[in-house]
Length: 235
Picture 1: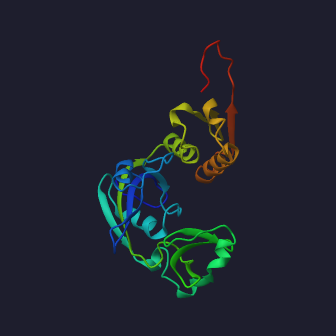
Picture 2: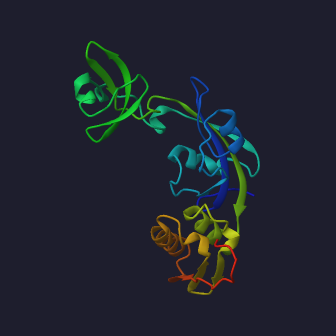
Picture 3: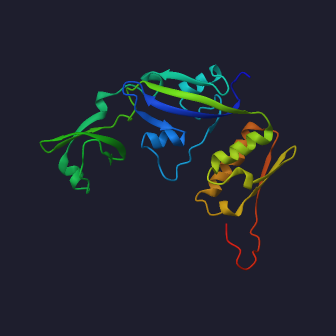
């Protein structure tokens, strides 16, 4: 089953730096724990992408059609197709007192905000601090191990995946989806009501649906709070 531009696919991947084999990103929980990079609250699962939409690094996105379903493949991405080459002009020396005056005690390797930009402390000495404003992965060749777990074929599968992409903390099975010729109606489970940014997520879902399914011109969200019997738990 060939993969082509516009396909909806679920992928697992692990990204590492070629020069050091250091893993910097993964969708796989076991890998994150083994590499001691697991984050509480992070959702580790196969990620939805629409091929060619740029939801992942461009060079990786362009490689997806070369992969086969359920087969792990590797792609190597040079710096100029990843996060760019290192720019020496983005490395600055600043007086230590400028940081301490802001309540910052710098340490080598520390990431700080300076003049509205993120920088990494590279060196300390003689009352001065070297700050590197290059992206962390600038100048690095990246290697991705990618597995296309599933290709979504039906309209319902695709719309459910678009909903889950925006509201990943609530199981998609708890949403009720009804699709007509021009209207998609989504019943939102009560436990989703308390998610920060739900209104923005709903707008994103509606725009996604209308973009990928242009015949659907109206997206409705139904939110109901049902009366509970005494002793019944809130979601």
